[in-house]
Length: 136
Image: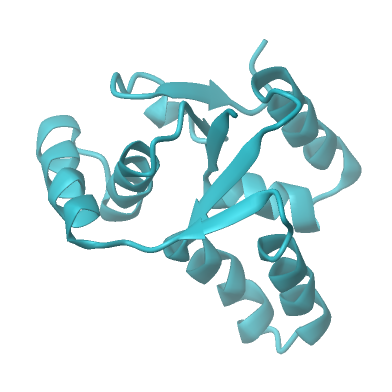
């Protein structure tokens, strides 16, 4: 079973973006996932996805995210101490921001084979395969 960690920007593309961006995200997932793929997100992804609908008092959008996070192919992982320890090392070594360091650390600690993101700055991270949305 392949495990792919989805960065928040990928989940946002899947749920609320226009069809072209959604389709790019879907193509990237299809190119990197086997038939038995498991999609992993962290509680940090959930937080990032909830901000816009909460700020806009958009219960429909908030419900759409909760349905997505409840799918049988989606696993939500917490952020225990080893994730923070790894994130500190990532941040110190690569100078990524706090959220990006936490996402990468969560993906590695969760045993994911691939980190799917739209953030090109993360493409060079060596500890996990990084799949960029829209990349050939």
